[in-house]
Structure formats: structure tokens, C-alpha cells
Amino acid sequence: MIGHCGLAAPDSAFGPAAGSRCLVLGVLNVTPDSFSDGGRHRSVAAAVHHGLELAATGADLVDVGGESTRPGAARIPLAEELARVLPVVRELAGAGVRVSIDTMRSAVAAAAVDAGAVLVNDVSGGRADPAMARCVAELGTPYVATHWRAPSADMAAHSHYGDVVTEVVAELRDRLAALTAAGVRPERIVLDPGLGFAKTAEQSWQILRHLDALHELGQPVLVGASRKSFLAAFGPSGGPGREHATTAISTLAAARGAFAVRVHDVAASAVAVRVAAALAVSGAAAGDLCGRILDV
Image 1 (spheres, rainbow, N blue to C red):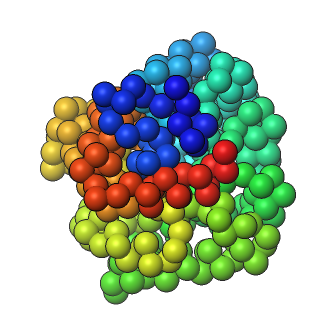
Image 2 (cartoon, helix red, strand yellow; image 1 turned 120 degrees about the horizontal axis):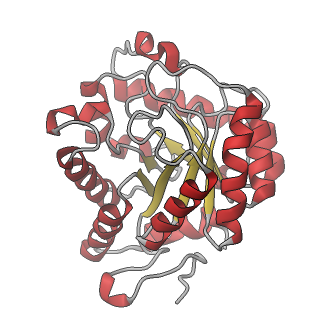
């Protein structure tokens, strides 16, 4: 059964299909040092196996990343990032999995799309690589632009805000204007508030409390809370407490109109977004976003 977004739809007993609900991006880090699962999927075979598992358990897209963006992480050479991600993207796409590429580099984005990726997820929102906006405009792919103030190595020093919600919205508005000025079609842009990126735990919670402010920008919104340090009160990274907290946030984000959530534990959030859609008065908004962004 195929939903109207071209994504594999679950049996109706499991609730609304893709196109009438929030989408789920499954995290696939092909890195040795990511904060939660670094080193687990470094070989191509292990990464592809896990990517197929993510898709089988409900990921609408598998988000492949070859460079850690954990707090304090240093950049890696371009050649190393390409070597990590391209074989994985190519094999997953060849197996029929819808793949997104998690990168801050235009060269990686272009190569990954050529290998079969259908969405570019850039945690710097185009600020780390000045060529990214023009590249994405030429590729014509959907593009996730995250709120970002500085590289991971020193982003903690940039977490000073007067009003974090107001300032994040304003800075995302500026990013949106810059991207569209570079030729990226507005209907292809998804905005991510960047929970944990140059933000304290309380600032991340403030943004989650005020997701409606992000919707005022008129763009689809992606929420990436999975296992992040602002959830530390619920337990250690990878522990059940943080997983349960992530699932709760997926439910709430979906109920508040998020276009997508990005998570490690796909199965739980796949159920959560379907529950949110089943309880919604109307799932039309999410369906419209899915069709508009994925254009299938």
C-alpha cells in the first residue's frame, strides 16, 4: 500500500498513513563520535542493515550523517565525510528506502542527491557553507534549515538570548529570506529550531513550549529532540527515560502541527505520530505539507 506521498503506508489498523500525519526521520549516524550512537554503524554493511531496520520499523526517511554535530565536535575532512555516507546512501536508495542526507557541505549534498538522497538536512541552515543555498536551489530538493549560531566546537558560548523564542524565530526568518534570495523555492524549505544547538536546556524547553511561534513563519517545522542533553533529567543518553521523553515530545510536536520529527527510536515515534494524527480534528495540514515538500 502506498500513501499519496509516495511513502510506504502502514496497514490501516495502525492509524493514518504518511501524508495525513507528521513524518518520522530515522537517525543513521555513520560516525565514530556522535553523542548517542557513535561507532555503532561505521561499516557500510552495519549502516545499511540499520537503515533498513529503521525503514522497516516506520521511518519515512532515513537521515544519513557522516559528521558528528555533538557539542564540542570538530569538523572532519570533506573526503572522509563523502567516504562515510555515499556508499550507504547509494545502497539504501537502491533498496527503495527514502534517504535524506545530514550535512553542512554543499559538495556532500550534491553527491548524496546524485546517489539517491531526496532531501538535504543542514544543521547550519546554510551558514557553514556559503555555496549550500545555491546548490540546493539547483538540486531542487527539499531542504531542512536549522537554527544555528556557531560550529559545534564552540556553540555553547553562543547561547545568550534576551528572549530565545523571539530571537530564534527572527533568525530563522532571516535565514528563510537569504535562502529564497539565493533561489531556493520557499515551498521546499523546512525550518528546524535547533534544539540544543547554542541553547541551554531551559531554552530548548522554551522553544518546545512555543512551537506555534515557529508556525507563524509559514513553513513546515521539523523537531529534533531525540536523546539530547536537555532531556538529561529523564535519564542518561540511550536509556529508557530519554527514549520515553523523546516519544512524548514526538506526540506533542505532531499534535502541534510539526511536519516531521527526527529520532533514533523510530518504532516508538512512528506510533506516537499516528496517535496524534488519529486524535486530531483534521490531518489535512500535515497532508498538505507532505505533498508540498516531498512533491510526490
